[in-house]
Image 1 (tube, rainbow, N blue to C red):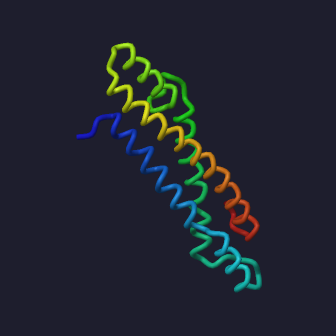
Image 2 (cartoon, rainbow, N blue to C red):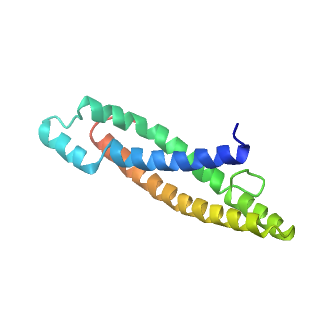
Amino acid sequence: MTTPRNSLKSKILIGAVAMTAGAAMVVPTSAFAAATSTTTTGALPVRYERACLRLPNFQIRTNNLITRLNGDASTKGSLAWLQAQINDAKAKNRTQLATVLQNRLAVRTQTLKVLQQRQDGLAKLLDKCRAHGVNV
């Protein structure tokens, strides 16, 4: 059985990896170039259209993760919450735990940067999908 902390960590890391890989592979720019060069009407092939229809869900999941990471100290899993845990561990003179939590904070800070970049990329992909006639 997983603890809530491990479960949250797993969700954030797995979500970040999956979203990064998914967003990068769902509708690459070259796919749009190939789609527009092979069709005369500007409509996308069915598989690219289905990929475009998944983008709003990716945006929602990315936004939810960013919201959680940017939450206050009472939001479990947020950067502020983790910093409070580090401060508590240091106050109790638990240096090893504080070090582990500090490393986790560094990873989550980096994850937040990746999520923000992904958010920008997803917005651009949505614009491209709309430009090709996909109603998202």
